[in-house]
Image 1 (cartoon, rainbow, N blue to C red):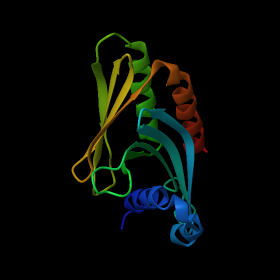
Image 2: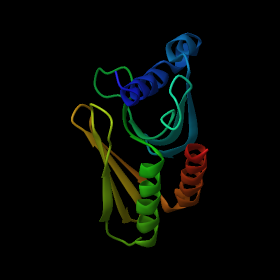
Image 3: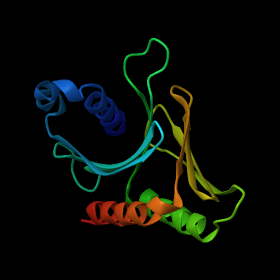
Image 4: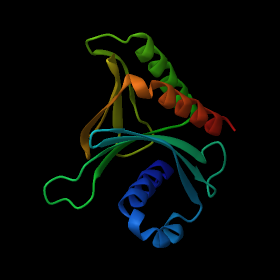
Amino acid sequence: MSRLIRTQLCWLIVVLTVSVSLFIPPLLAGMQLDIVAKFQNADLELDVATVFDSEVEAPRSKVALLGIVTPSRQGIAAPSRNSVSFRLEEWLSLIALWTKAVKTQSDSWKVVGSMTETETSDVSHLTVSAGRGVKFVISSSKRGTATYVLSRDDIAGFEDALYRVKDFLSR
């Protein structure tokens, strides 16, 4: 199993088992997941996170995640999470897309760019749009599509999270 798949599985385990966190440490072994920032919009959540795996040699031991959590749906007990993972080079590309989106703010939505995840069997695709805020759409063949609109009020906080993660990945 590739490390990115393992990272995504651990991410899902963390989200689904918050109430039983005493059982998580043995499952994660050398992995450490840190939520850098959370943003709320109605019943949706956008998370920026980092993962460090001490069992993997640098520079492959660090990954960043951007995830959208959607509420549980009919009969599904847990919320759904779509996420995309990034290494440093990809994170720098995300920062470039972000910068373009912030500069392109308008009253109507305009796609400013997209990225496709690598090194995973369930490839996610991220599309970034500018409008009255910044829209993130994460889609994958297994998890479907999730959309989060980051309000203009959250732009500074999200940018801070982007650069904190860049620093983490650069070390």
